[in-house]
Image (cartoon, rainbow, N blue to C red; front, top):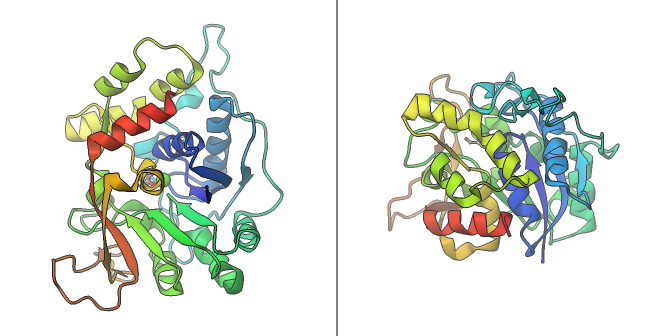
Length: 321
Ligand code: RIB
Ligand code: CA
């Protein structure tokens, strides 16, 4: 059993990661925290709780609200991808009686901040807690600044972020989670806790098309199936307009898969650097991945390959079980 803390900027694919994590018996989701990214943390927090309510979760993980602003940069969001509410505009959907299909959730939040909860759990589960940040790394970096002693007991950080041998998705060179708070990423890489990065190089290989979703859930009208249709529609339309494919990436689900199904993934050790100052390339992640190149002392593991179909089938097997 792996004890994990999922740090999210929910987010359509964050919601899918939450669903997969809660349907992974190999994992004990000790907590889910929120951070500004796809949308402001106020909305990310609401979206996290709405996702848990939509799932009809009986036993909630501890949920805590996190940082509103990156360490240094002004916040950049991605509402154009995830909808103005950050959750595929599901808050606009109405039932036949005119009520909101997804009402605002019960405020099931701990009084602790995300930063303090991360530190507290690092101390409760020394050398066991795995952090899974799937948004900007602001919460993680601030926890390291505030209590380095307890944060050194983190077992591993498995994050979604970066773009090494592929273009970025925010700028030509930068992936969103790194771009929003590059200083936080550099601090986390320098801190010394083992880091595994799941970059666009692999997450862009796993596309959930509208056709595939339909073939998996068919005419099912249970809450989860309805939520999956509703929450993915906006991002599928975005990709239809931008890339001509009615589908969406499920970026944030892949780190969960790496933890429970490592055989679907290929990783390499590398020395990773982050561009934190250039206006043109800030948020770029740099590593020399050519085989046989003498690496500077590696500071991260990078996921460079994925069995895309195998993982996608696993995703559905687990969440629709
Ligand atoms: O670049 C993709 C990442 O940015 C995902 O985590 C998505 O949710 C957004 O946060
Ligand atoms: Ca995310």
